[in-house]
Amino acid sequence: MQAAPVRVTAVRATAIPSFTTALRAVESLLMSGGQRTARRNAWNSVLEDRRRARDRIETERAMRQSVVGRP
Image 1 (cartoon, rainbow, N blue to C red):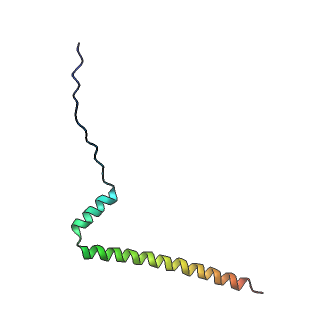
Image 2: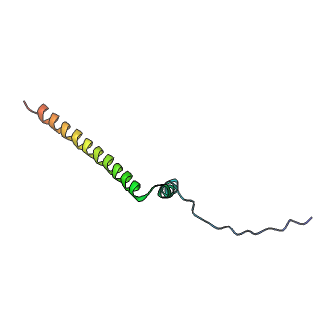
Image 3: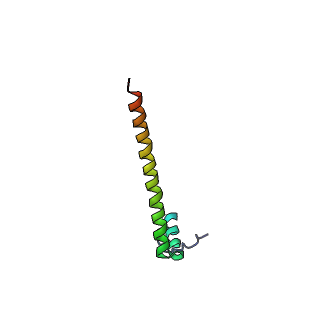
């Protein structure tokens, strides 16, 4: 018996986009530039609020320590 001939097929390596990349591509198709800007601004506001909350907590801790440290 003879072995079946080997078929050589060309395989191209293409990068599979990440989920984030695909989501951004769909977002850019569905949303106009103004809406993207609004979302970006909203997210930046969330991050700024979190930063302010961390600062407030640190200030409260420092104030408590200064009161406790007094005789």
